[in-house]
Image (cartoon, rainbow, N blue to C red; front, side, top):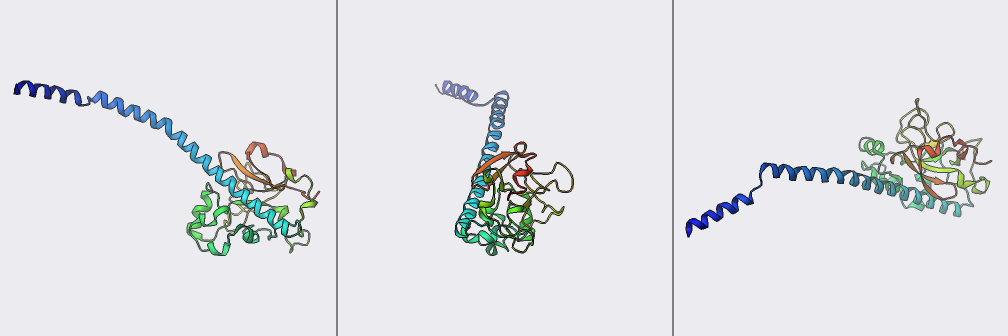
Length: 240
């Protein structure tokens, strides 16, 4: 009786063990499943980052329009190279002075694009860094410029076809990578450069060749690089 029991135990143990072939099959199945899931997870993560970026620029647009409502439809002022953050701090609730010494770029909150790896890394070593979003050069409303004073919304023809802000490139449009300076979009750097010193100036396409676009009408869209090519009139001569 005891011998028969031991025999059955040996048979059960033999059946309970994986053979090498079975183990390799299991590993291959896991590898196939991982290969199928990883691209989907990567796509989902990128979609979430794009959604966050679009929400950021939508909140910036809301803040700008609250400013317009309070100041007789004049756009927020800024110097030619300064960022938009200081002018809108009362409307975004985000004071640049409070994150000027921070090494964490995401302390910029709505001013930080989650895919802006350039500024994220620069912030760790250089401290104060401008936001991730470029401003229309012609909407900077610079009271110090003799040829360009404050700009009012009613003066702009077809505001739904003219851009106020997009994802910003790395350069300031003057051929220099100065991450603490707010990037401007102009006829010289819009919407992007295919080659040359200013290839990373103006609008940048960080989200699988797409960028969020804040139009002067206040609407927001996501545009592919190809859909903005050759549309300089959307930014230049906004007052005509």
